[in-house]
Image 1 (cartoon, helix red, strand yellow):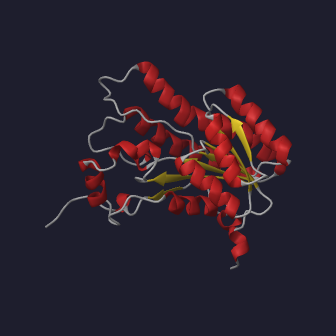
Image 2: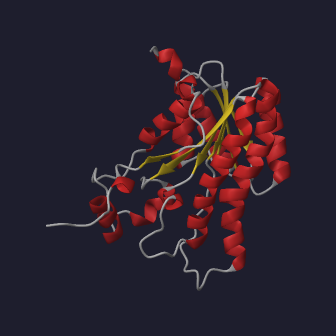
Length: 258
């Protein structure tokens, strides 16, 4: 089994939320594997910085996944510039940690718009390009909170949206298989990213490390390697699954035993 199975040479990828954290790591890993990469995110300066890291054949687009017209323009621009679109990573996401008893409806709707409706709309428009090609890979970034709930609740909108992303993955995998498109998801555990920066040095961070069999927070490069697998020919018979990349978090009951 040669390394060519994991090569992305000749392929074109679009990574939403690709200008920081997990999205940036995936974009860089795709480029290293040979893909031409476009990132789509809202902050133009960060987009430009990551595009420069990716090299002269990369592209960056200002993309708001809450806005269908923005998505349609971005997908069309990627297909026009590169002549095709082989890989979509639905990574853009936001979190809100308020209680269900306090969360405003507008905040709930914003989290759902970014974390769930965004992947739906991106899949809709990118999937049309992939259907015409007869092939494609769609990777949705869920979370361990798409598989269970946080121990004290609180992240109600985020948890609901990430559970729903796994359902979206499965239903789209079934429908789109006939067109040669595989749809899978990744459930990251805790990673040291901008979204979790507030946890650094806190008792909660220590509790997470005790709960995780590896005893570590993840490195985004580890997760990016799983994304390369799902984007490559090595995963051509893998569809509709969710892969936790979490240091064993979901494998353990989390109990501290003496």
